Length: 308
Image 1 (tube, rainbow, N blue to C red):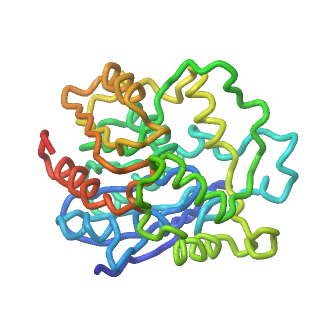
Image 2 (cartoon, rainbow, N blue to C red; image 1 turned 30 degrees about the vertical axis):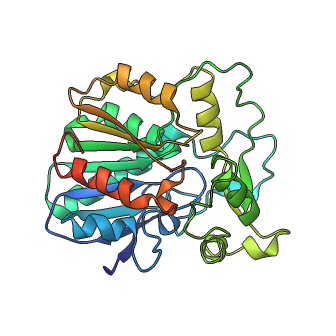
């Protein structure tokens, strides 16, 4: 088990401070980009049985970084969190989040003296990473899109009703985490009832226990970004991404399905692009019993293999 170092990346000219964590190594740098509802401490850095995805990447020789977007975990809370969620634009949209990712990448490059990093992004985070990669590919070595969001043409998808922010309880998370597991199949979550993960999630928001039920406040922008993508308006152009790219997803992932992966594969501008569907996993495979296959597939790709 590695010891993660946690620091704050100061903001400038009104920019939010961002929590940044690192498992340091002399190897190539990898930055994890979290998804819509929980921060780095509950995803890449969360330890089940004493072992996290960060630990796995560090064991493979990588210099591993992760951070929390504004409004999540240890990063600054935006001003709109103090206002009513209704009537305002959803906060924390992908273009703004991409600028936060750019700050973290610049910090990593300045700290390490390297010219490139690799990104591992999950779910909504793939929209942010894709937007960054399409504009700054000279700074990237490889890109892993875990459970990526793709463009769909679903009627009725709209962002007008998305609030500025929203509340997510443990029950909300658990319902979402298990909805794609086939009926009758044994649980695949490492903690089927989120016995430890749930309280740790609530602890990421100091005000969570003041609500009934206890819940974490998060930006509404990610939901709006996903709704836009599924209404045909993608946050970035995959054709502008030229770096080697891996799409990896669970076979039961309802958020990132076969059609989504095929859409991305057909449009990515990368010469090296792979699509890997892993058995017995959902959109939250990094929290499930099948996570070893996810770690191995992503780790081998990041190490340079083109057939992980």
